[in-house]
Amino acid sequence: MSSTTLQGLLLTALILLGWLISLVGLLRLDLGQLSGPVLVPLVLGAVLLRTLLQTGLFIVGHDAMHRVLWSERRGWNDRLGTLALALYAALPYGRCRGNHRRHHRFTASGQDPDFHADVGAGVLGWYRRFMAGYLTLGQMARLLGAWAALALVACWLTPLGWLNVLLFCTVPLLLSSLQLFLFGTYLPHRGQRAPQLQHRPHSLDLPPWLSLLACYHFGYHREHHDRPDLAWFQLPRQRRRSGLLAPA
Image 1 (cartoon, rainbow, N blue to C red):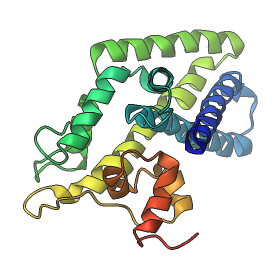
Image 2: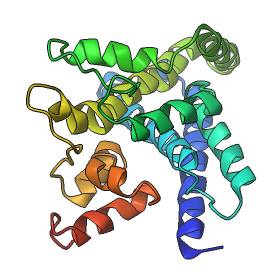
Image 3: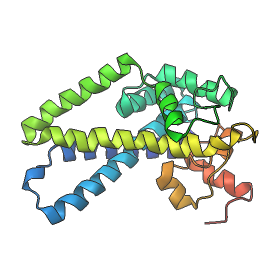
Image 4: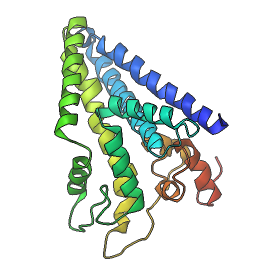
């Protein structure tokens, strides 16, 4: 096993464990027992943490789609990707991988499922098209069923358990989808729309610490398209090699 694979698997384990531990802990949280001064910052911090971990699940699945999560063991690579996307939003790994391969093969064209070529379409129109490429009736049924099951368990643990599911499962997923769309699709690719067509996606000019928080370095998008064989945590080094990122 290479050092890159080992690092990727360790980071994957941290993301999965963080997601699971925070889920279990927050579903047990009795919001009714918290006072006002404590409630707001606690809930806000928990939602932001869950959003970051939720996005991390998709990033794990994304690396698996490129077969760089565990390149030496393709079967385990795909199993981990399937698990990550299922936990993220009950997304089917095969369909997502097919869409993402088309995105890389036909970037900024009519065959790119993540690209909106209509210059008249605003950010919301592009977001609707982006989400439509991933959401299906079956996937939504699985997701809503999982939330309903969690709500039943949470209500058994605490009187306002359904609110915990809404705040710490539903809201983070919605925020995560916006995070992935803005930093991983819209901002990097919007410059490729006519009439001023650019042939390559744009990378966001962010320092590494902010790039990590923004979307696990997904904003270094030109580097990702140039080197899709690199794991997400290798993108700052690739950007530094290009001379566009100052040394940390």
